[in-house]
Length: 336
Ligand code: SF4
Image 1 (spheres, rainbow, N blue to C red):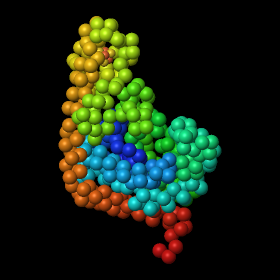
Image 2 (image 1 turned 30 degrees about the vertical axis):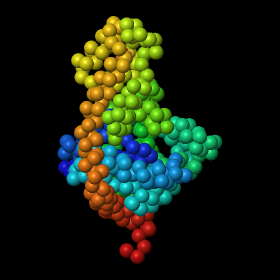
Image 3 (image 1 turned 180 degrees about the vertical axis):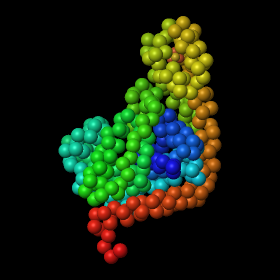
Image 4 (image 1 turned 90 degrees about the horizontal axis):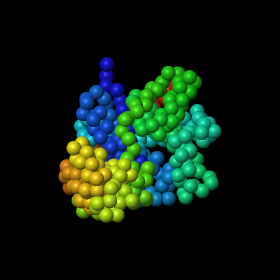
């Protein structure tokens, strides 16, 4: 049996942060290294434009940043194909074909889309665009254009995969068994809270540590992390369960360190500044090899371009094969 094909990706709306690292990147590297899969990662620039249509510069700039982030965490272009969504016109074509197979009411009911529309009130006001409402359709095109079989997602993304599966079933029931129905693989990676305790981490919230942050930036950011608000003096008895520094120690420090931190905090024997310094040190220890790898690729922009171009060419070849079958099935294969 051949290797199962995985399709994942990110919207290039900013550099990737440690939330992405624990949420998906580590898992992607692990799957890549297992040798059991054929992984593709798309940089979803067209999808990024659905809520950044008025800021194309931002999307363009972040395409390279996101690719550098992938390479810096260990995505290996010899094992994983990295490609740019807008350079695969078949994805846009499929999106148009699929738009006949999904109703507006169904898109409006999609829980992921509903949540995101609510979060983007500032941009859309009361009336959301056709492009944003329809992004699950373009995501279905991303997946099926590459014959994606396994799609690693967090729980909040499951409705998008279900929507894709519905489109595939509908397509196949009308035009014949052409498309592969992908399966969602629920990653056990959890969503990482921001330094301020916010459930979401992001640039606009100013609560994220980026993979490309310098040592100084990490030190500064950790110093601003929210701690137990009832603790004023070092000998006040603390509660590490309500402290973001303790929360991050669980991600970056050893089990023994975490145990000591909790005990000393509860006993009023640990100062918050020292606790933060220790955390910053451990985060920097994790990020250092990532920074070094990033620097290697930053110093070789022509190599990064080559990786993107070759990855995109390979993905396009796959998409062309799917499109040929799709057009034949839809009786759109004129003059062939
Ligand atoms: Fe948080 Fe550490 Fe301060 Fe306790 S000592 S409140 S764990 S920063």
